[in-house]
Image 1 (cartoon, one colour):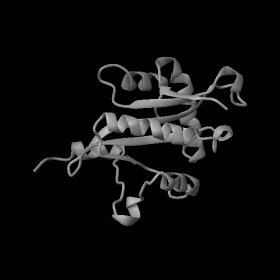
Image 2 (cartoon, one colour; image 1 turned 135 degrees about the vertical axis):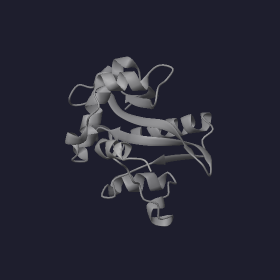
Image 3 (cartoon, helix red, strand yellow; image 1 turned 180 degrees about the vertical axis):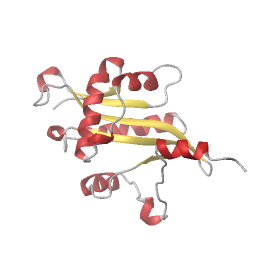
Length: 172
């Protein structure tokens, strides 16, 4: 099997949206997907892009069962650690089931690691569902540490409703 890992292009928007939905369905969270191709185009391209995306692509003769050549993706964006400097955060890593176990995920991680180094990052951080043991094992093989258990950090977030409530609170 041959494939390439490359930065995404606007022609990939439909495929990336398909993969995002597949990934969300895998996590039983399809109802939580609020992005659409236009949002991805607006936020992912141009001088003010807020994220990057890599795609794994096979030649037309090696399409997936469903007839697709884009068979995986990896989203990432730059953030900052006040203790350690620039950090690359990996939002998603997803490879369609037919192509798992063939090195595609490792190649995507290799390429994004190069992006992290090019941007001067001290770390590459990402999240994984605690129930997804194959993913946890994969990341562990790459040398990743689960800081949830070692450093006792928890991921906390406010959804848009609670962000609005916080903004609307009277200031003292």
